[in-house]
Image 1 (cartoon, helix red, strand yellow):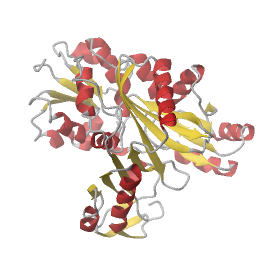
Image 2 (spheres, helix red, strand yellow):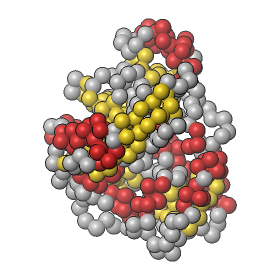
Image 3 (cartoon, one colour):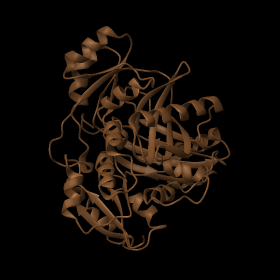
Image 4 (cartoon, rainbow, N blue to C red):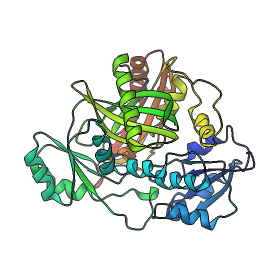
Length: 421
């Protein structure tokens, strides 16, 4: 088994670092889009990593890409395949099928990758979903708003994260929001070729927000966690922070677990990890969306610190078809939280306070991604956030408080820039 490489689809630097902790040298193959490899300079980033065997350019997001890949690489015999990016999930699932390896299943991955299909399939299985419909233009959005009271959410059916997502309170906002939400600039993380945009409009559901992370073996959960999240204020649902495990009653935790299992049964999910997002309104969990991949925003790091559990290692063990070392923890030993930073849009003059922030008790990391001369842009998606603090403490409330204290020490001074910033 050690001579067979593991394949990660979609480049994530921290994933390479994690794999290096338990994979032998030259045992990891990275597959990514040629444009992305070029724009992110992936080969240069992994040049010093002994664990990486090869970086393969492949237009994996095109139809039939996985089958074409297998036919073009007849001598490749991988040990495991895992998607590390949202857009990679269908390709990785189909590739696993072709190589006879554990995976989500191509059908399940396609459903979860498409928010409209996810709503249709899970709704038919009895999972509570907000009212939702596909829309072709701004007039369709206004028609939906005429039929349904209250705010709505306009978002793409086939993009990742919070890209192109906005909460609309009035029909007067629709025309400008349509232009804004259908123009998706994901920069270096996507191929340059044109990609179809399909939009949804949904009833806005107000309530507390959570996500469930599960490690799943042939449809059976082996590990589960509930993460609590908070959003930045405003009409963009951008995460401001996460806490693990969520400080909620056991009954709600168990219901979120069962609803997530219901989603997995509805789509026919096989093996892998899922990140399923929920809004609890008047005691009812409503499905936001569900991804057949690792959670982003450092949630996996929080889970591994809080329980503790080697979730990444267990995932790759499962993807190899090997047995796990034993029962995984069902409860956390402590709590972990992350809080994200944003600043007034404009050009950065100075960044200060990081040393003080890192000295806050229980804080394990605090970083800022901008420096003098960089630009802070208006917060429209997670990529505009400019820093984060992580803390580990005895309770969820204490961990959250420590991250807030740390970021309060950070001072990012900006001056007004161009109107579009």
